[in-house]
Length: 190
Image 1 (cartoon, rainbow, N blue to C red):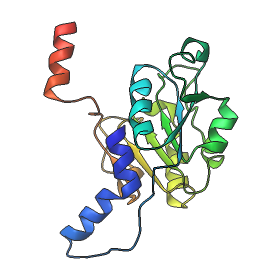
Image 2 (cartoon, rainbow, N blue to C red; image 1 turned 180 degrees about the vertical axis):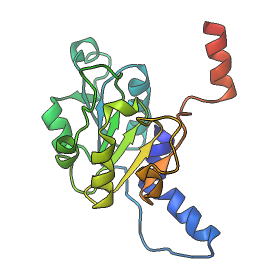
Image 3 (tube, rainbow, N blue to C red; image 1 turned 60 degrees about the vertical axis):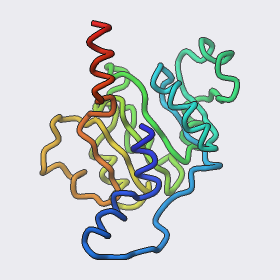
Image 4 (cartoon, rainbow, N blue to C red; image 1 turned 135 degrees about the vertical axis):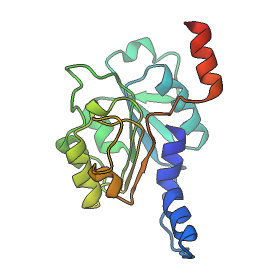
C-alpha cells in the first residue's frame, strides 16, 4: 500500500517511462503527501500498520470502520469518522476491507465522485470492493488524479483490461505481501 501510494503520488512510473524513452520532462506531475489527509476504509491489522507509516510522512489519518470503539484508545492520532466525512475530507482514499456481499462494489461511481478533485485512490484489499468500470471512468476524465492497484475483479489481469491503458494508474499483480520473508512467516504460521 505504501509503495503504491508513493508511486502514484510521485508519478514514479511516468517519470521512469519518460526517461527510458529518452524524454527529460521535469514539469511537476506529482502530489505532496505531507499535510494531506488519507482516508482508510477499514482498520484491520494492515490498515493499522499503514496508518503509522503514512503518519510518519506527515499525513493526517482518518478512518471509517464499523468497530471504531475497539481501536480508538489504541490510536489517539487517528480520527474515526463516518463514511460521508471520510469521502469529503480525503485527499487519498485507501481500501482495507474484506470482500463480502455488503462490501461488493462499495466503492461505486457515486463514492468516487464524492472524493476531492485530484484525489488519489489505493486498493490492496480486494478488487470486488471497487466498481472497476467506474474507477476507469473517473481516472480517464481526470476526476481523480491517480490510482495504485494490487487487486482486480479478474485475476490475473488481462491485457485488454482498460486499466492497463491508463498512464495514471500503477498496477501490481496482487503481490503486495509477496517477499521471501513473508512466505517464510506464512509457512511457519501454517
